[in-house]
Amino acid sequence: MGALSTAATFGTAVPTASALTELTPAQRRYGLLPQPDLAWTPEIERATAHLYDKVRDVIPAVEWPFFAPYVHAINRLKKERNAVILAHNYQTPEIFHCVADVVGDSLQLAKLAADVDADVIVQCGVHFMAETSKLLSPNKTVLIPDSRAGCSLASSITGADVRLLKQRYPGVPVVTYVNSSADVKAETDICCTSSNAVQVVESLGVDRVIFLPDEYLGKYVAAQTSVKLILWKGHCEVHERFTAEELRAYRDADPSIEIIAHPECPPEVLAEADFTGSTAHMIDWVKSRRPAKVLMVTECSMASNVQAEVPDVNFIKPCNLCPHMKRITLPKILSSLVNMSEEVIIDPAIAERARLPIERMINLKA
Ligand code: 13P
Ligand code: SF4
Figure 1 (cartoon, rainbow, N blue to C red):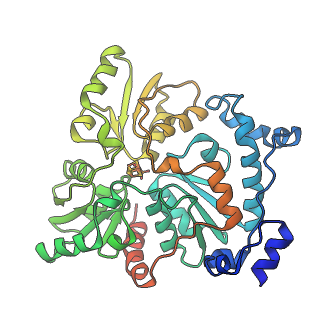
Figure 2: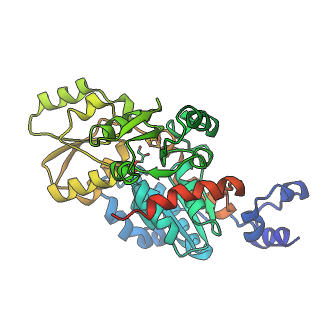
């Protein structure tokens, strides 16, 4: 009855009794709220002017009236809900620069999720990132604006696959990239991200590990350590599309161009790069080196996010977008906060085991 009267007070469609029984725990706890008014008004223009200043180099003025009412409504509702928005570096600039409280690569987001002081986390990224936040903040409500935001690496392997591998290689520790489901993490000894994979592999002090599920990240790590890696054939559908030939063509067209790449790319692509690193390491590289012209061999929104901060750098964008990351939009973030959906819920028995390898990774000394 509480949720019914809350909904009526705020003027939303009153849910039927059967709809009420389908509410998630978060929706039951918070009640339903109305969609805030989304008109472009002089007040909204004034209230969001400081945010438009951050993105004016990457969002045309003619588009801002469509974004600004959402930005304003999200930022207001965020305070009412005591929520924080965590956004991965691949989110689009209006999310990354205008509504996110915390931005970063997978490692930074995982570390911050553990410490964040809020009741609610809205994860603007893909599902495995939201699961990681939930594992590290089990008492917080973790929302993902579209739970269909998956990842080709995470869906390349299941917990049952890992159990079979462990039977085949008894006693060999399992290192799993965070781009994986909670089910897979539950079978894992320690997680890694693209920022710390070599350090994690070497931290185990063994001569052989099972490294899952990214074959190309595994090959990149194997080239830098004497530890032997048993690999899985998972690939990122965004990074595997880049080719060495395409990069050579860019360099032939302009030999002054700097090429930096994410280690999820195939080895022959990385061989063409001047620098390889996680998304955060790539951003740091551009901000500190300020190359005249750079090609970031990774998801394309990241170049726009960095360009907004370093307008003096010329970004060449071979626009490979991650279709999963792009499922997260301002209207869905607002709807997520209004309706407290979609809530990330992990089976407690899996969560208990999946949390340990992430914590082991986070607790590794730098
Ligand atoms: P980072 O950890 O480098 O941000 O990578 C995450 C990811 O999904 C890259 O495709
Ligand atoms: Fe997964 Fe690739 Fe998308 Fe990253 S860019 S979330 S690895 S599909």
